[in-house]
Length: 233
Image (cartoon, rainbow, N blue to C red; front, side, top):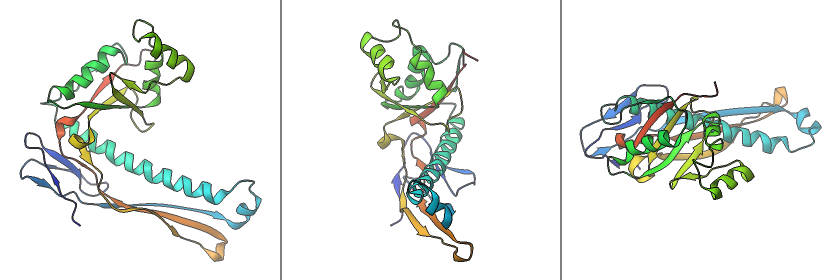
């Protein structure tokens, strides 16, 4: 089937045309047909290593392939988000907070999404920026949340908005997205599969992870980002 989705009428859509190429912006028409592209993730190990390891190294190698594919997916998605946000500053301006990742900062960021009658669904940040939230004092969070932070070191939601962490997000930047049904899609033409890639002459056992997907944001107003200054240096 051809990947085809409705475009929001009051905002432009953006899509990854092909991996590594410029983002395509669609401002006219009712539908968007994103191009799908391929991801390859090869890995191999010598036969003697399989015999010497004390754990199942083939399972671990396959897991590393899956991680490599997911990293490539996230890289393309973040690049699409950043390009879309930069092209949409007229509606969702990018601002900077000098007070770190504070409650006021997070509140202003989600307001940039909700002012378009879109629900704020998730914050996306890296681990270092997320650590700001764990340093919030009792004046910033209620006692139950503070106890949760002390016991687990984690904060799952803020005002009902999910907190998602990725090491691929630039430091001191926080992204906010609306619900997936208002934001975009990741069409999958070929789900992740592992193909054998052995090299008998070199005694190598190998696999290639393969996937064909697309990436589309069909509502440009459903994503925004803001920069917070790291007060800890």
